[in-house]
Image (tube, rainbow, N blue to C red):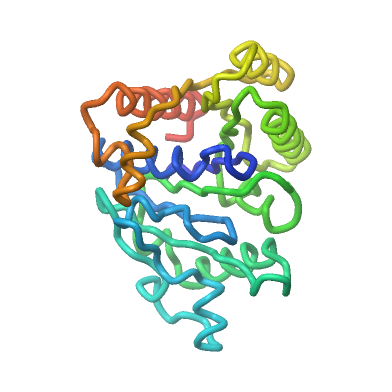
Amino acid sequence: MLKIAVYGKGGIGKSTVTSNLAAAFASMGKKVIQIGCDPKADSTINLLGGTTPIPVMNYMREYDEDPETIEDISKVGYGGVLCIETGGPTPGLGCAGRGIIATFSLLEDLELFETHQPDVVLYDVLGDVVCGGFSMPMRKGYADQVFIITSGENMAIHAGANIAMAVQNFKNRGYASLGGIILNRRNVKREEAKVQELADDFETTVVGKLNRSELVTDAEEQGKTLMECYPDSEMAEEYRTLTENILKICREDGLC
């Protein structure tokens, strides 16, 4: 089982990339679980035709009890991807990071991995603040590899550096390692050079470069991933190449 955490600042496109990676893995015959670790709870929306499963934290508030089965808090989306959203607290009350901690504990109690036996698990994680619950997916036993999505914009680079530093700080504890950087282009000046500098600073590589495409937006307006809506497009080929590169890195590290 390959467990990957995808981090990036809010608005950088991590949910778009993660859901298209899930669809790409599924198209290869892999059994995939995607877990959205963002209080907005919209990570899996394009795998589910514009809908989402009830977020775990919402379920616990609404029913005042823990769910009894995985089916209570999940939906099966495109390609058979099992979709789960952690959700977050009522706005203005509580800590979103604690919601992730509570969700992960619950998924362990429900024996998610033992029951569904996935080939690939994808965690889609908000990376603006890498502390507490938001660092959970990179801890031992959850993700094996962390991939950081960034553009060449300064705030995205800054967030990416913070995430990479967090991975380095956890490295000696046997936690997840840094798999690489994913460039999600915004077409700013010196974009490739700045992202390469970020990768060099943390002794890693740029594992994929994704162009801007109106097809992505068009697919999402239909509540679908690009991989589902336009599987024969050049953009879909970029996602397939990225997926293959991630698998290659994981094989080299003996993770799959």
